[in-house]
Length: 93
Picture 1: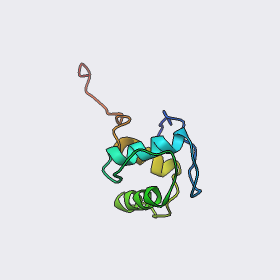
Picture 2: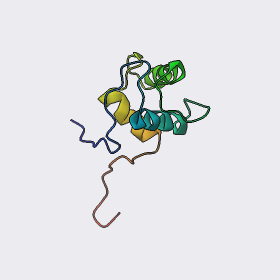
Picture 3: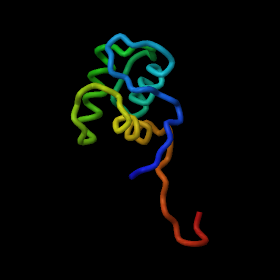
């Protein structure tokens, strides 16, 4: 098990043409991770779907173009939205 928090509250994205702030956040993460270029939009269009598929393939996930919890967890990390928890020796921070 890997605990994590969906800090941007992005729901599952599985429909072409979906719109909203959450889609804008997905696109922003894809841009930060280097998988999407162009102006920031709030629509899940062909460019975003292709970027998600490319990202998924690079992460060893079935490239289905849907942004589910596994894709989102990895996208948060790749897009610099959150840092991964790490273990440290006593006295280190």
